[in-house]
Length: 562
Image (tube, rainbow, N blue to C red):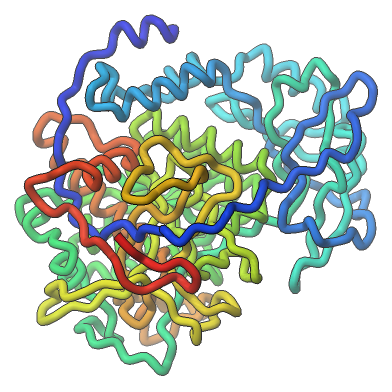
């Protein structure tokens, strides 16, 4: 199917007004001028070669290389190719979210996306041939033809891309990165977007925090955390769930970089009467379901989704915690297209990624959006300082315009979980995550422009602002969670209270699964890329109050306001 045929064949779909029962947008209105994206050209490309720009990591701008990276170190690379027909893709995405368009909520299949916008087989073959000619091993090509996995020694990689890799010291981590932009033969320059794996600066972390020992939760869950019943009551989900829309028939994909203990999740389900287990694993790039230091994050995600959408199936996508593993795992979620809702509770500060890597993720999320997939990503737990230093920064991938960034609040309830009040979450004395304290991640992207849907009172900044929505995340008012994995800081007793925006993201994912079931029961299309709908409900008059407007508190820098 070509683009013209697709546009002609689309039918008009009716606008459905939804009550999205969750907490409100944390508006970030005390803006400062966004810092310019870090760009360093390092001279001209060698003769007959083209630079592949965007590989200079902003986080390293004030660091000097220590020495060359070991020549025999084997690198795993993920070469991202550029999409085709990008202007038409952007137009399609806008139309899919415009209630007045005949393309509204009319989604593509992965096969249609690849045919219309993916790199051509010829382009893939040309790049593969070059990689092999340079002595690199080609390990596979993704179904949408956007990612080519390859491996080789540092010496081979430096030769292939005319680049030098050096070691740097960043905090307590030793990392490697290129000292200049890579290049390829000129005839390939228009095909390649990114060469992931040239650096290992970005290291995704789980965005969850355990409650401090000094805090004593007032809630009825074991250990004091909020129970499923209390969360549903606080966010007015009972009528939807009790009416039969509990996520049944829907699938939530949960992005993970560690494994979990199934017996823990089952214990949670059994204790709260949430029904039988409905989860299965998808292992990417050789990952295994071995419960390690991040297991508490995985179990938190699964348990919170179950609390809000107990009828939903869960696909747990587990990949390696490397930049290539991250890209491949996200790409697997969109090429599988098994889930219309995706929960993401792992992230990295935006400045730890080169702009070409951010563009690669953006292309993946664009495909998901075109297919009707809604991504909900935690915005971070370091307040406005996501890089854990003195610089203002936001978290990736919550910064992406095709992802709903989910921030954090301090939720206060009355008897049985009835909603009382809510404020932006910040705690300067809790330095688990950042020397500035902990708080809901949020601020202004240094890379992404403000998307057209992001409108509201006094929003004038030209850059993407994060978060879009929020939910309870303060560890002092956290969630009841069951985890016994000692490597993850859990105890044999199992019950503990966990907060962080990584709890808020799966809560929103659960809400979306419930809403999608309701839409299906009415013969309607799913939410799709939810951002436009969320802002449209906020900015238009509705016969109900869809949100709690958070107007008090701060995230260690920005104040919440209307």
